[in-house]
Length: 329
Image (tube, rainbow, N blue to C red; front, side, top):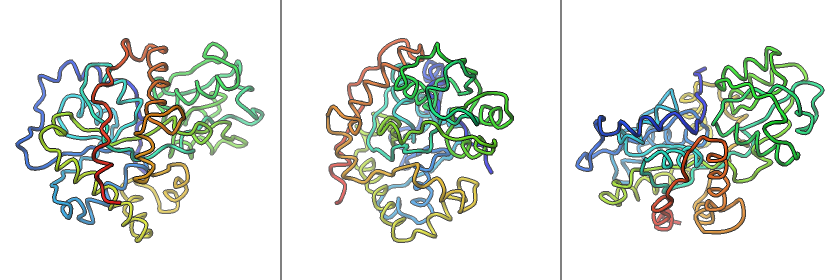
């Protein structure tokens, strides 16, 4: 099994500052380099590549898999790749650090694959008061932990936070070193190996809190809008291909993930892949968790309040729904 890195909110700000020293892809390059890493909502890209669906839609794509998710964030921030698969949290933190990025597609929402898992004897979030909780600071699972604590009328000062990388945090919990852990699949599987452990909160409890996206350089939208449209069209065609060829698709995605087909299927319900209709709803301004502008405000409050971002990100040009709107029904 490959080691899946955490979906981080930070660690790329420094990369933004050295962007001028990188060798970014240029608009004259006929191919588009699309980055992705280990998350179930992004593995359909592997299906699109292997089944020739990018080419079918008239766009040449170099699909670049990153063992380190943080490296993929850095690559987009510095212009080394043209597009990347990343969370809304990370995109906002990157923009706050000075990067220019545009969200053109919602891939999915985490609906259970991010979890707060506790030892035997802890039956709810309220029982976490005074306990040691391992989580990677700045990750979406740190965000999930704070959301769960707030709902239980607790705050960061009510727990003892043990900052560890997600794989180490899950291992520490499984080994009995901490009382609870915040982790995402497949590290949830590691954590749940501890006898009597259970999830006391998951991303399913907070609909819309952890959305994942296809994010592109603004220059790509400006200079190659036709190719961006082809990327979005390919995504929705891929989802249809997966529905029509479920077994083959799962085999492709499980292989890319480095897990068994059975393990991959166990993650299915925890990631809700967005349809075109769900995309349109998400991009529409609103006052519920289904809307990106609502979640954006919540996340900005989190990243600035926790010191993960010094300044509020500029939102001009961040969301561009024209490609979803123009995609075939």
